[in-house]
Length: 266
Image (cartoon, rainbow, N blue to C red; front, side, top):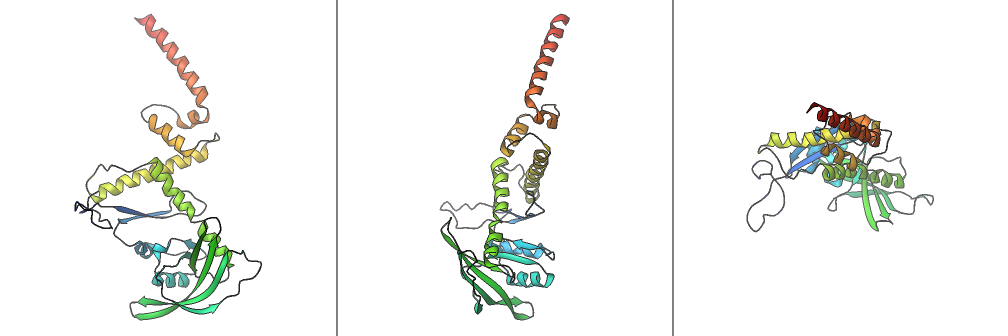
């Protein structure tokens, strides 16, 4: 992509040529492997700009990376009755208001559970917002995580468990990048680039629906490879995928009959 179309971030290379980049912001439901909402920005646009496009639903918990930290949006989440779980920024400024007792029955990975106060910069001045910070040590990854949330009633280990579910969206992007690599773009303008990304998302959706309908187990990558090979072949996709061995035998018989007929004709 070109720097004058979609700006990228990072240092300028030694040759002076900077690359462009497009960022795909995605919202998915926890029980659905396909995007519920997609929004494009240049790579230079800050992540939290997505929260301005998002209308929080009540009785819904949103889980996202710390790149989307925005105290103003967090305050709106509370007004809408929506919960959130994210990671606190390393340079976050806050005041500890209360240290909560961690019960012995709670998972031993919970190191700290506190109520903190942060400053919210609003159009009419500054305000205060009460949030909860949970410090959790993951024994598998051997890392310490600091979570930020407005869910005050849940157990602290549940906060860590909710954030762990966020890995599902990473699996979605891994699936997209692994099966529909966008290494080359056919257009040289922003709209053409977005259309090509949308096409990849639509194909991913269609193949996900097909995979769900099939009784025969297919790995998603194998399904994509098969469809890519047979794009210009005329066949009933669902029937073929349910029993490819039988359809291959049928095609061989049809080919033999066609050969005999053509031999008699000539």
